[in-house]
Length: 153
Image 1 (cartoon, helix red, strand yellow):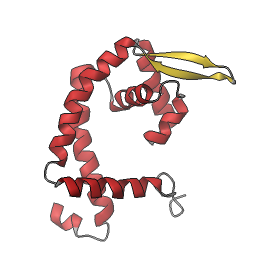
Image 2: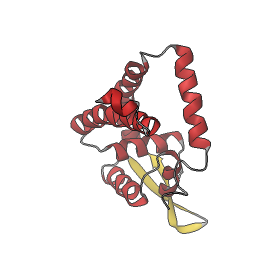
Image 3: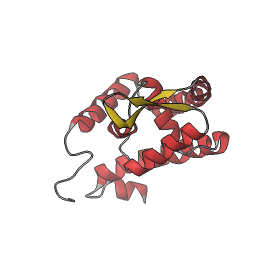
Image 4: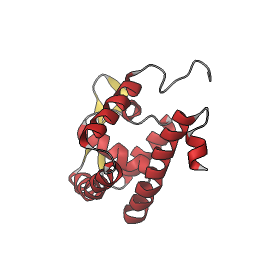
């Protein structure tokens, strides 16, 4: 069945979907069981640690998800003490997000198995193929039609 889908008219979309969904099934399940945290929360924590002071709405640039999903994830992180919110001087409603020491310690525990999973997932590819894959993904991500569509409104 998989070979047939991967040879269909929708093969490129199906290939991307299959890889992403299969990986998410493993990674998400691990993090949810181990840390009682949905993928939206740990990826938001990762973004906040990489870019301290970023706003919740800026997380959408890195992880295209509905804003209410990101807002719920940030609220969970704040409630659990992994992130603190600081008011921004130029916008009374917006808050800059910063990881706490507790949040950074949690992220360290999450990143080790996630990095190992990344190595596992990419292991069938040579180093050169991995770099080609990344370059192609960057090209798709930089394009204007990844997060919006002219044909689907």
